[in-house]
Image (cartoon, rainbow, N blue to C red; front, side, top):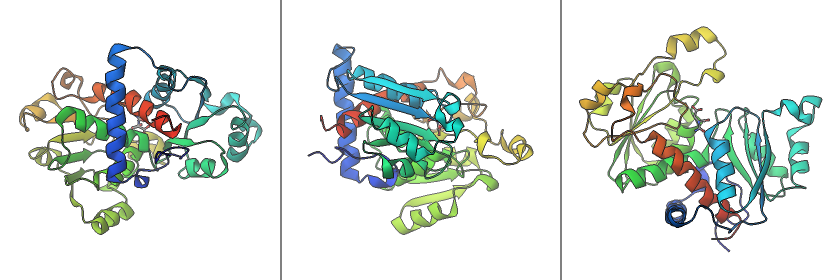
Length: 309
Ligand code: NCD
């Protein structure tokens, strides 16, 4: 039995280095296979449910294409308005219902801990596609894969993570994976959106090399990777506070021209204003390639959870 067979994918912390390496390897294999065929039939007959209680473009559509390119099919909803949730059905009951139809569930929900709550009653594996400001492990894995494919090794790199580090779930899952590499992390955020204290404490316990600052230009001087994130509007209680912070960091072409010529720029997307569009044509702008990697990594995860690789 393979290590992911039948397992839930809930948080970055569930993976060790060896496991991350083997997910990267399976992803590479699928990438190769897709060069010669549009789809495979590894998961023929399997059905995935995508239950998205919160907006999504990439995560949902990449899970769905990943399943379809593996020969499986998909059911689901995007927005719970048309489901029995509006009648007052609990998450547990919704999950136990969907369990009767499908082989796996990918879900996104606004509440921290909701994916774990779903997994605790589910008879089929649950993929956490984002639980509020909590975790987003499949995104963090595709971020790691993107660094691998853009520059090879992660060991020895300096990675700058910038934006809403307080609420950014891709960052929260990301640090749980980066800790397995010999890299330096520089966290750039406005004071009010710094990394949660518990995560900073964990980084210390793990003995990671890291710094916190609010100076992006200075941090970029030594960066190999710049990972920009959106200020998470939907997590603010006070809209005025969001207005004040929304343009804290705006990456321009000029700033990149002064940085390391090999700098790779990543972003989980959606972008609002934090990367100027004139950055897009630069060779280091990796964020749309990163989107494609999302489908490939999710293919690997679906096949591994199904026990097929
Ligand atoms: C991220 C998310 O939903 O957490 N997007 C994604 O899944 N690619 C980032 C964000 O919404 O800012």
